Each structure stands twice: as structure tokens, then as C-alpha cells.
Amino acid sequence: MIGIIGNGSWATALAKMLTHNGHRIAWWMRSEPAIQHLLSTGHNPQYLTSVQFPPDQLVPTGDLNELVTACNTIIVCVPSAYIMDILDQLEEQVFKDKIIISAIKGILPGHHMLLNDYLVQFKGLDASRYVAITGPCHAEEVAQERLSYLTFSGLDRDCTGSAAALFATEFIRTTTNNDLWGAQYAAVLKNIYAVGAGIAHGLGYGDNFISVYITNCYRELFGFLQEQFNQVHPLTTQPDFHTSAYLGDLLVTCYSPHSRNRSFGNLIGKGYSVKAATTEMSMVAEGYYAVKGMQKIAGDLKVNMPIMQKIHTVLWQHQLPAAAFKHLEPLLS
Image (cartoon, rainbow, N blue to C red; front, side, top):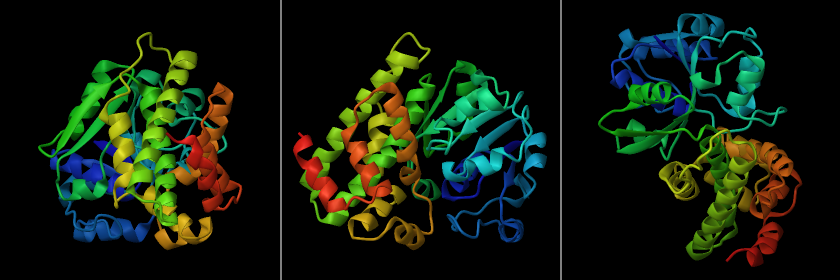
């Protein structure tokens, strides 16, 4: 049995892929009413409500330790802002013999690190048993069974390939690579840049400016990945960063109306405060939390990232969006 921790839209989309392929899943949800609704109707009451789940393939539970004990493969799919609340409930060596598939696209708050580094350092995980999922792939299109693509990144080829095979369907194409750190950092950064794209849209910038903005975001992302690879990555051959897991995911997150990070940024650009924008959306925009951790990581690596810096000043240092983007304009080309 496969375990899923989290019950948001992306967790629900992943559950759809797995049950579509006939897998039985244990599904941890924080809300007891959501568990009872899923059991009685076969629908997640809050996210992707059109998706119908076969009841005989679901074991919903509110007991986190019960799920971890019962499942050898565990998918972690909660917003990074809340992941420490989950991890703090678990024993130190609980993941030692598990396969962890991460669908988190953020930085762990307070620790300023990716989930795999934290689990290896503090929870006894074997790094070769960790696989990360990246896009480009929106949950809403998975619910509609529109053709989508997922990339699975891990250090062990067999483990990564097995994880990818769990999710491959006629509407989900899967690929694999061994760029565990770079793929995850790209997924984090694209959320940050999508907030910026939304801010630009909210401020009234047009498609011409936003296309130039995204081009420069990719240049900045690419520069960070190269520096990160050169300084700390254990691989000897640099991965191909010009693929859908990097550029494609950035494009769809910056442009798509499904993108919560773009939507969040759009509200900020229109004059909403961070608190008001968060309340309006009733969803977590990973880019808001991630930019704080990525500032620390980029500083440690001594990588200059002026676009990310401007987004940070708007979200965390209360600079007016219009002023921040006016300063950003001459930096773009």
C-alpha cells in the first residue's frame, strides 16, 4: 500500500493517478470531516471535487504514525510552510527503510534546506531512497485527464524509475533524471518567479514585458543551478537544464491561470497586503514562503539573484510593488 500525506489539490491529483493505475492508497488528512466525506462519497470535499475515487482503493486516516508504519512508499505532499508540524510528530528513524516521494516545492522553514537533506540529516533516510516529483503539471488538468508531464528525480536509477512507473498513465507522461537537488531548486524558484509575474500583471505590465521578465528569470535560475551544481552537487556530469522540468515548469507557473503563485502575486500587484492576498485565495502560495529560504541559500552560495531579491523586498520588506519593478526594469534585457 502507498501512503499519501496531505489532502490539497496536488495531493488529490497524485491520488487520482495512483488509483487510476489500480494502486491502493492510505491517505492522511488533517480534517476528520474530510475523511468521513471521502469515505461516504468518494470525493475530496475541498479540492478537485469532480474526481471520483473508488472506495475499495482508499484507506483515509487521521493517524500519521499509522500510515507511516503501514506503508513502504510514502508520498509527502503538504505545503512546505507546514511540513515541520508533520515531521515533528514522527520518530527520528521512522523513514529509515522507506521510499519517500516528495511533491513539495518549497524550502523547509527555519532550516533553509530541501526536504531530502533534512530527512537524511535528522530522520535517518537513505538518500538513494528519495525521489522528487516536478512538473510542468497542474492539478486541475490532471483532474480533466488532459495530457501532462512529470519528471522524477533521484540518485538511484531503479528507485526513481519505479516511482515514475507508479504514476504513468495514458494522460501522464513520465521522465526521470538524477538531478535531485537541481530539479527541486528549479521547482522552488519557479514559484517565486511566478509570484513576480503575477505582481507585474497586477501592476498593469503587458505580455511584452512579462515575456522579457520570464526570459531573465530563466537566465537567473540557470545561473543558480550551475553554481549550485559546481559547488555542492555530488554528480560529475552537469544535467541538462534546458528541459521541461526546468524551463517548462517555469513557463506554465508564470503564465497559467491555474497557478496559485501567479494569482497571489496578481493580488499583491493590485495593492493587496500579503495577509489580505492569502485570505482572499484560501490557499498557500509556496513562492511567498520559499523566497525567504532561497535568499539564505543563494547568499551562502554567493549567487547574485536580483530578480528574486526584488520579489523578496516586496513580500518580506514591505517595498511597494511599483517601486520594486521600476528598479527592476533596467536590469532586464
